[in-house]
Image 1: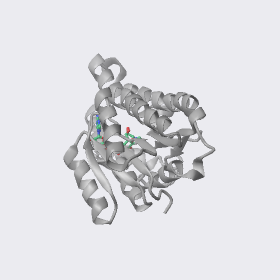
Image 2 (image 1 turned 60 degrees about the vertical axis):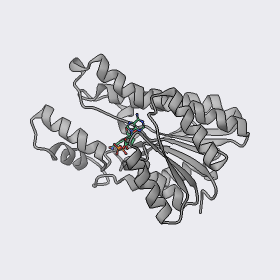
Image 3 (image 1 turned 120 degrees about the horizontal axis):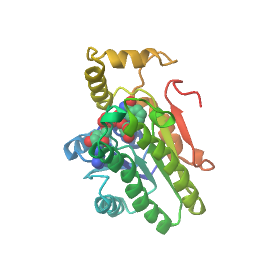
Image 4 (image 1 turned 180 degrees about the vertical axis):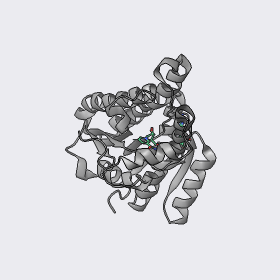
Amino acid sequence: MRLQDKVAIVTGAGSGMGRSIALRYAKEGAKLVVADLNLAAAQTVVDEIRDAGGEAIAIEVDVSDRVRAQSMVDAAAHAFGKLDVLVNSAGVGNIIPFLDTTEEDWDFVFDINCKGVLWCSQAAARRMIEQGRGGKIINLASQAGRRGEALVLAYCASKACVISMTQSMALALAPYQINVNAIAPGVVDTPFWDRVDAQFATLLGLERGEPKRRAVAAIPLGRIEQPEDVTGAAVFLASSDSDYMTQQTLNVDGGNWPG
Ligand SMILES: NC(=O)c1ccc[n+]([C@@H]2O[C@H](COP(=O)([O-])OP(=O)(O)OC[C@H]3O[C@@H](n4cnc5c(N)ncnc54)[C@H](O)[C@@H]3O)[C@@H](O)[C@H]2O)c1
């Protein structure tokens, strides 16, 4: 087991990739804080972990709220005595054309995707620095952060921001042996892409499912990404195997982005 006795917080762990990462970390021996805006969903994941013999607690958090992000880290330390790993997976995205993007649309995406990463990472990093044993912070970026899209301005910008924040946080935390890296997934089969598909379909006048079909047809590896596909990279970035790696964003996207 590669994460034996590590304590990890995963935000957005009630669904999609956050859920898969939490389940995989538990299998690798970690104790989990399953954090989500949706407490019932987080509790279901905790039940799955406990049923499999693991240790986990559920915490309700809105990552865009600095005080609640701090409470989440305090609760983790209270439950398990320490914190080794933070995965920032909570995220949202809407398909809105550039000219129609409102201040509300922009703030909604940036408050959760960017401020959320900032508050959760600050709180976790302070705890890790105090412990003096290093740590790992892993952010869920996106292929959307590598390029622009006419209908996805705010989301693409927010994920470019996550890639940039990963670099700055890595440099700020390097003296404390806290590694900060990110994963950039592609088109992942989660409730997130179901919402994206519906929004694209409405905007482009397509049948539901057609936007996803077209996006998947363009993936070099020829299939949609499953949430489990990011868990290998997430374990690597949380384990000592990545101790000499920081500031990086790993593309785990079926070959969609060449860089
Ligand atoms: N699905 C994709 O194709 C895809 C691709 C690249 C990157 N991503 C990114 O990966 C991450 C996970 O995406 P997913 O597809 O698993 O999404 P998902 O919608 O399946 O899960 C996201 C979870 O985040 C939670 N959440 C939303 N707002 C929150 C908040 N303010 N505070 C705490 N929790 C909150 C939701 O309740 C949900 O459980 C996101 O950051 C997303 O932007 C997704």
